Length: 427
Image (cartoon, rainbow, N blue to C red; front, top):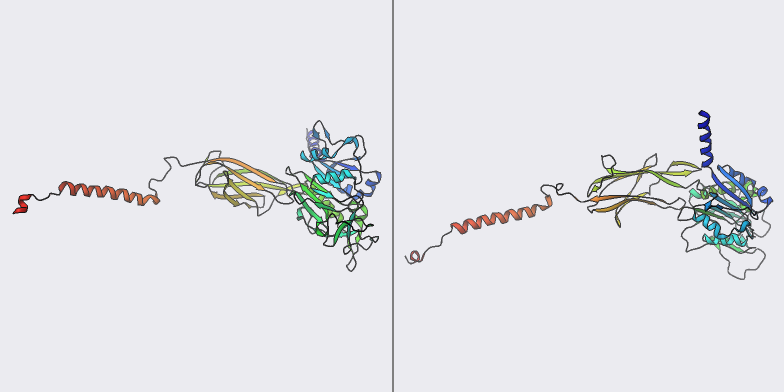
């Protein structure tokens, strides 16, 4: 019996692993990016390697996705095996799958099309990001081995205090009309995207901080897409390289830590939120499904957890809000967290009856969209629940009794008052 329990626990751990497909360009790709791939394996992934031209390449079977994550480490691919097209990867994202796209200076059309579907435009083949002010001293003279240090995303994506990274690849630009795109790492103010061996005759795709080096996108179904403009950025060479910039002390590159952080985010190992234990009740009473009465004092609580390096931990934030909504919010209040990730608040039900919702709608850059809605009814007072004498009605009480008193006085005067006769007036 003990062995069966152990076996079941091991199986449950295996099922909990994410299934990840890594699509390689050729045999050399795996050797060139061995450290990157070993870091993927350390994230408790069940990894399957396939080549882009493999005729058995498939990402869906019987209408279900075969993988949780896909890494496209094949920047110059011209066509995927087994007839896979851009639409297949878009369907994979729509079904909740996560996608990492790696590009380079010799980027192929399938990669460019796929990036465009998620709101990121990749520059033409043969171009690269050039920066004449921020380049490594080992550069070959084209100033396209640049030093990236302009991190734009929050630390939940990039990691805390990321070090400068080396980048040699193609420039990208984010679609300004796509609000789901996240600018993770962009070029400096002196960067631009162009071919290194050609004169600049046309305006580049992007210049300055509009040059996107690494971008992301979180879909409305919380699926995540990561687009990296440099395959060399993930290489063993750049992982172990020392950055030497003119006039500054040499420092080891932060490529490995940075790439590990953004891939963890893309795989939802970091920045993923979930909730549980939603309760609401009258203050001082046990939770109940009965309707609330107008002006009741109620208490609401929700427990929120955050994925941190693949483990669920209590979430801590001061900007989580609760809305008590009928059609529009009647109450909006900040939820106060404790050390266990439990958020709670007390408030007074408005003097309006109807069908309401306790609604928590938390949407922040880098975190998955958290939405919770619990429907309740709010009823008016029953006729036996009103106060016997309402303080605000005292003036009306006084006017009623004054009218009754006036009627009594008028009646008394009318009944007992006697006018004098004519004879009495003559005398």
